Image 1 (cartoon, rainbow, N blue to C red):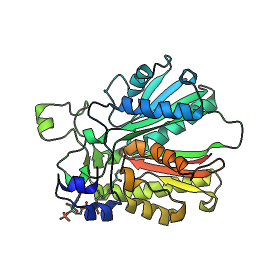
Image 2 (image 1 turned 90 degrees about the vertical axis):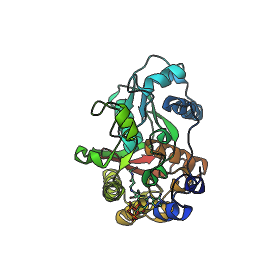
Image 3 (image 1 turned 60 degrees about the vertical axis):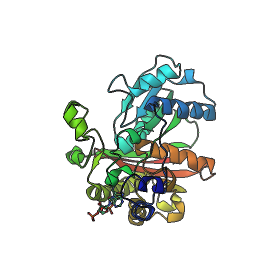
Image 4 (image 1 turned 90 degrees about the horizontal axis):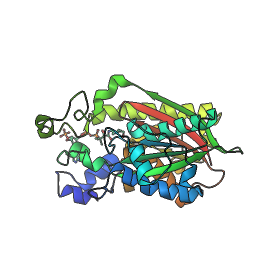
Length: 309
Ligand code: UT7
């Protein structure tokens, strides 16, 4: 769906969306597709790419803000739809940071010996939870899913460092107010569209820059690396201006920064795995490439990792 498509539905323009966000187009799931359906597509491709059989997976982690149901978890539906073994399956709710949270958790499970092979995915169907009449938010998001298969490495490669954090005091700045136990769904909440994304964009913007910069710098510091040692930076892609401000503050060159926001918009937690896959397919990530990634999202939550491929 292009910016021009949106301009036929709300009072916006390609010019406003492009200059304020860098977004040109986004993709939406088909009617009837649930988060688990998107994970299934991504996970099957990831398993095939890794040459690993689904029966080797011993933990399933899914990050999402729009789970199939409040319960069972989307991870459980993925297990069923993919015909997987009865291994532990669960969801992570960390919004745009959920894939990085999943990687950090999966890495810890492997390092502790609790798991050998972990499937980490994020799937978001933002098109179902945006207010299609609110130009402040509707144009910003896209749908998608990405998956990674994590396994112990015997060489130098792998997750070299990670950091994560959250600040619940700022949760109200980006929230889906209704639909949970704090505000169960009623006719009134539906009429007031309280089940959709509510965001104070300006405020979120400032925190996003600060936390993405901090997480990026911390991850590099923990890996004993500087931005000169990083081959590719894959930031969460909410807004090109957030990415610009982050790389200026963290002193990461633009040439090393991988931009996908123009093509996929903000896919919340799915942004980073989809961008990682796009970078691999374009040859920007090869064996030996050192990738820095960082994210910021509702919660607030944030995280950063350095990954040696
Ligand atoms: O995924 C992690 C969480 N999300 C984010 O990190 C997003 C963070 N925030 C942002 O990216 C930006 O704040 C936005 C893109 C949401 C908004 O950009 P902004 O430069 O902060 O604009 P603004 O909110 O200050 O709004 C400026 C004007 C307003 O009009 P008035 O009040 O000045 O007359 C808005 O009504 O732009 C108007 N506006 C629009 N105009 C045309 C807001 N959305 C649109 C639109 N088309 N789609």
